[in-house]
Length: 504
Ligand code: ACM
Image (cartoon, rainbow, N blue to C red; front, side, top):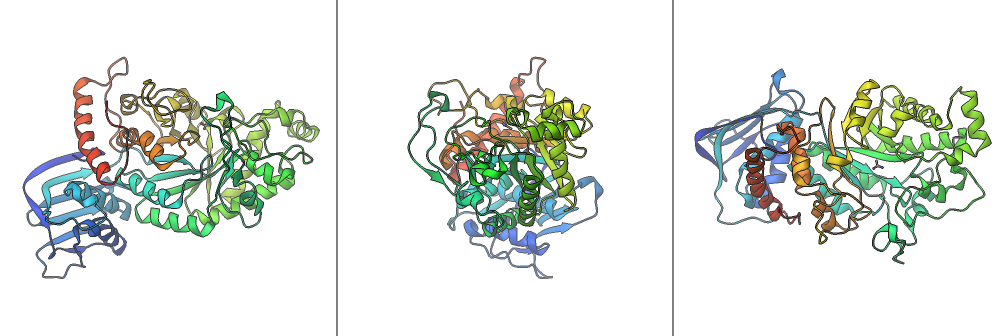
């Protein structure tokens, strides 16, 4: 009942039981992960294996190139457990597979008594289809507490999702501590209220909200995620969705005399950063602190939904566009983002951007997050840029799962589970599910919207798309196979206390 489905899995006769005599042969960080994930529920010590031990779990590095950066081979038979991978990343996924093969009580936080920790004998070869298997969590709209972020990372790793995209800043809140610009969090981290009900109804709830993460807290989260094979990509959304930053530092905006509040309603603020050299320098200083905390190769610099009216009304911005020979003020965004890309390249980093940049001069080397439709994936390819498939039509899990009026309030749209599972991403770097949090203020609400759809997308990313009918529908046997396996997987989430939306 593995989820995601392995590339190849062949049953072998018998089983192997992990017990108090079982030792572990593995690179230290992998052995530690095995103990961390399996130790609490089993109560087993899993010590380093001695040369004469009979009962051994062996997780070793090999130089088999067919396993790639994350693949692994696993053989369980009555004589023991042997996993091989070319990288520690691959061995970490083998650990997650072993955990899924154990009885579901393994997900308990306390020792589960009277369980025989029996593994079915099996031979598995497992290599992911896509290198990027991501999940965006928006902590800007609601500052989700750190313990929740740790749990979130655990859940990604369980599904062999390798990237947490943390959306750290937006009009309604700035969550990343910047030492050089402390008002970003002191002022930008707090708002007076949030919408009550849907934002289109225009009612405020009257309750202040705020919070932010210290750099040291985020470093610890990054290290915890890395031990599980999860990279964290920070997003600082620029130069739009930046009203919280302008509220903190009015000189970053287009009218330094104007005092803005941190956003209190959802939507797209018309207030964006100015394009002056001093602001660009400040943004680069901010990004210096970002790369210092997040070692991942990619930094997402946003770029979605940037209204240009303020630039069009700004003599400085229009003069700059003319000086640069740009036909449109909007193209200033591509030029400006290129400056960020060059600055980050100096740190050995690459930029990720939302697909709007394709219309405004995306910098060479940018990785495009195609969200406005599957056609944006093709547009990125036409521009010669790598794409991560994140279209709202298949990956926006802040949409409701059905049109039942009993569904919790959602921003818009309906995205059923089968649509996610039938997604055909095409030739892309990978896939990513989005959990924008306007209407996901609490941990239970996030889980409800995340699962089971994120599990379905994890399988698309790891195991590749399933075949669909000409009209895009799942063939009934495919649907039944997935639903059956998913039902077993949801029992794992039950054990973990994750309140997913039940299957229809
Ligand atoms: C987006 O949904 N604005 C990327």
